[in-house]
Length: 255
Image (cartoon, rainbow, N blue to C red; front, top):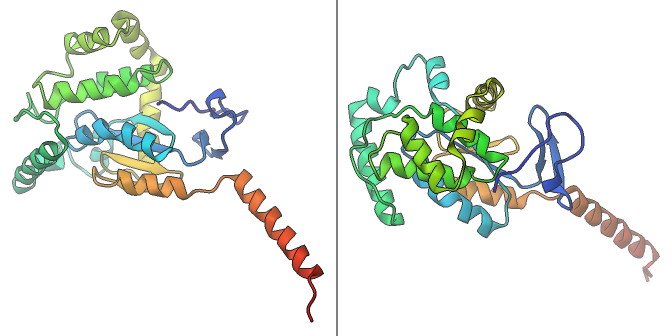
């Protein structure tokens, strides 16, 4: 489920009421133990990750925030004008075979080749940001990935995206209007810049506070890391118990 945050330095969001929270500079309030899932709609390995991360997080009892961003600007910083998979022929051959094995193992539909690779995920990412406040980002994200890798559809086409939104019961016209608003475009730009500033270099990536985990095979490790984080309340309880034990030890007979 999407996790709202407060970036104004004020009170934690309503979602976090009753939950231990942490204020991360430049990010806002996050529930303790939150995992952030960073994905790019053009990313092959983000497809299987997007299809299973919500169930994994729910099973682990860890709050999940969906963070769409764009890899293009990050790749340009490395001097790449295309996916590194397309730059190295052997790498792209391995990637398609590896993705096939992963999808077969997880029971995910896969139809290769996709319409094109990589596809332009800009419009879908802007829409996914809009859906965060309305709760449809997870379902929309999974449907877009399915359209790309299981249905050979063009995810940059308005018609494809509108059909997905309509199937989810979302007002497509209103969603597109919100997605194309200047403030939402700027929000995606800031989110992409944040990804770069936090050390992300590929997708899918998972962050728990300042810990970065990269790759479709890393969500379990990220969730385990999130679960081990102790809340301030629990820490204070532990300290109180420790002080109480210390006092009891002082009063205990030594003979």
